[in-house]
Length: 122
Image (cartoon, rainbow, N blue to C red; front, side):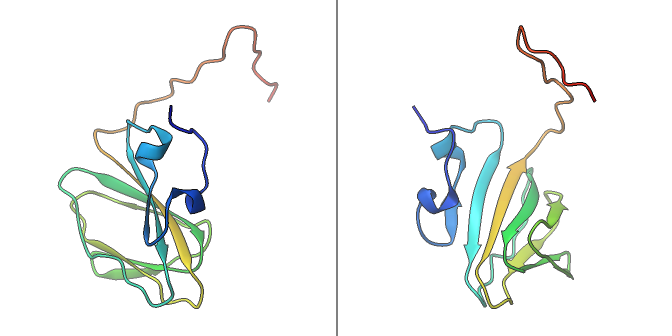
């Protein structure tokens, strides 16, 4: 049985921490990228998979189709599959970025309350 809860430090060492298999994820891809100061990620694009980037720590940059965007903790960036992108860490501290990849669109609102649980008053 896979653990369903973890910390990226528990998922290995180095620049890429695989998330999907250790947490038993099947519906989308997920990795944590740890960039040392001055480190560049690969310049790449995908055939089918869009990616969502979430900055957990540090101040990396993302270049999307030639345009550089400065990021900070809490920043989000969506990049369509065929768009060229590259992460860079020009900051003085380690940057930690969660990347989630998927294809084929949004499922829609399908959340349900279990039997006996009432919706909170909002």
